[in-house]
Length: 344
Ligand code: SF4
Image (cartoon, rainbow, N blue to C red; front, side, top):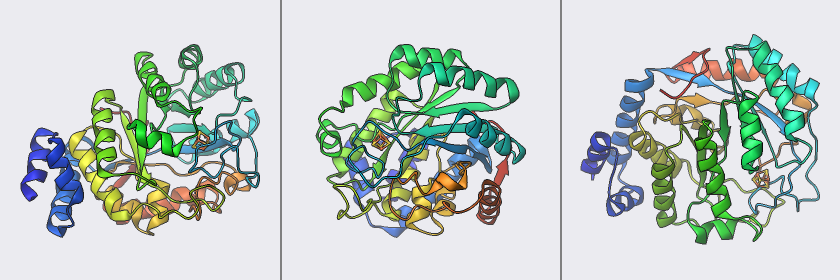
């Protein structure tokens, strides 16, 4: 079985049968070799660098009703907020001083964030901080909107595809959410010249190994610059409140596989990974990850961006988050860099 890891390391691909075997095995020697090869692959492209993305959670309003999400429209107990233009600029100012060179504005699909609101704001941030990249993660929008946002100065867009297999996608989302539309958005973003991030949850309810293979194949087709995966963690006020969460082990294995399939991709060690295990992000970094996304949102709204239960880092100021992660990254043997961190 270790031969499959070597083959993946050398060729960056496996057959479906081989992927199935690799994902299904509990052989510790295989996991250990995968971790080692994933670390080698990331070091060949990015050495020991870890890029920081300053996450600004701009809104907890969302028109959608994804069954796994704590801020879904149908959760009457979700606390709703949205940041003002001034709040967002303040987060950027704070982040820039702390060494962040990428700002990620993320939120639910909130109609308040029109192009007319966002475009001047994006242009202003780019003028103030020309050495920074701006990433948006605001869900599905029209081609025209993506075009305007790009022209205003946005560099990157994150839109997890969540599940590439129709069968699984329709079990995780209500009928009005269409997988084909989500995929179309991702290809449009690429066409418009964005650096694109896609990704999926690990261990989502009803997810099988076949669904995961479909996700990997979709990513091969899309060729995104960034891939975000993290364990599914249930939220107490969703239809999936009683479901089991995704495991650390499977998430790490898939991170290793992704690093070998996409040697140059930007691969975050996610907050969800740090939530399922206290050293989850460090283990992620040691298994091929090269990005972390500390929170720059004002502390007073952090707990309200409540996607899943027990989310970590909701009480600290941005500077504390930054310092804590710096220590963790150094202790894991890697080096935080104050760069935009583009995909090479
Ligand atoms: S996952 Fe995103 S689109 Fe779905 S309900 Fe949550 S915030 Fe909205």
